[in-house]
Image (cartoon, rainbow, N blue to C red; front, side, top):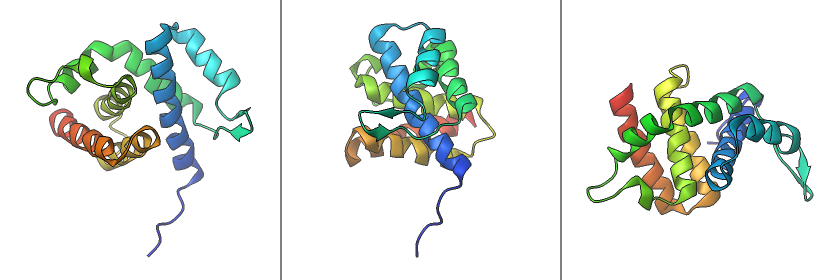
Length: 152
């Protein structure tokens, strides 16, 4: 049995999540101010063609909420994530991209009760698969599942 195609809104939110993780990664590496970061993504990334690759149209307000929310609540999110890591693991040991995936997913679980838990987890597992192999995607699944049990 085939899964139905996602709605245009679901596709736009998926694109927003992937772009949010990319923006958060860029911010962590370059210390880009939030307003400048959002403007750069609005003007030059979301829905644009870069090097013959079309970036999907993203739900801009959703992208802005995730990026801005993670930026504003980073310490709170990191504390929640840290509490779900195995003994002896510190958040500083996580790959920088992995950390952004977990921050964005945790933000949605904490601050977006309008988005179902299963959707959040599934979407960020898919985002993880864009950067990592199945092992890391399963890690994202496990951490976000544990976070969801705490915050919802």
